[in-house]
Image 1 (cartoon, rainbow, N blue to C red):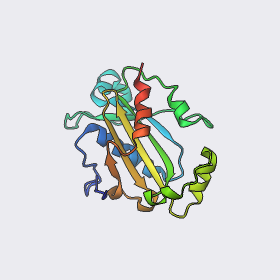
Image 2 (image 1 turned 90 degrees about the horizontal axis):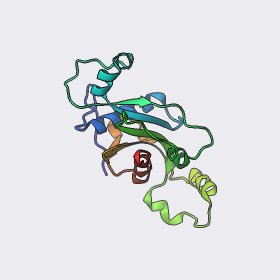
Image 3 (image 1 turned 45 degrees about the vertical axis):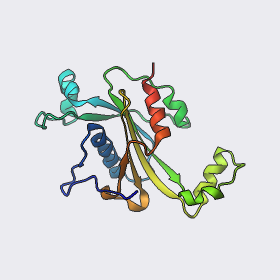
Image 4 (image 1 turned 135 degrees about the vertical axis):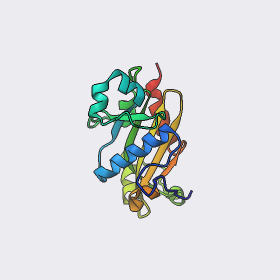
Length: 189
């Protein structure tokens, strides 16, 4: 897959859907913080509803009323994830209020290219496998931003540390299916 620029020369995300724009906005926010950051969770709320129901909060967030009127989502950063809790366990404890349209997560991981898959030792537990990947010469650091909506829509953005620019961010609905599924489960009753 070839990277495509998701950013115009002015720095504005060039994305058609509100969900893609929200994912790119979160990716840009995370990029501004640098690498080696903790996992961050965001609620996604309908911007127009936020302005109508919580005008003071909308003002604090800098959401002016001069946009084009297109449907938009506002990412709202949540409290830090509890230290020492596995991500899948933590996500299993979340229940979103009705005002939350979707959620997103940004997380950094190490990954290997498909060519290294055959060399992965079969007898390693999760901790030893992570150590093995961390030592592998072909490992790459990646920041994944994954978002889902209550209606099932999904979007992801991937940024490699070695290609850390907005023009190199890959987007797509199915880039991180396992994480998207875990996020979607936070909306199940």
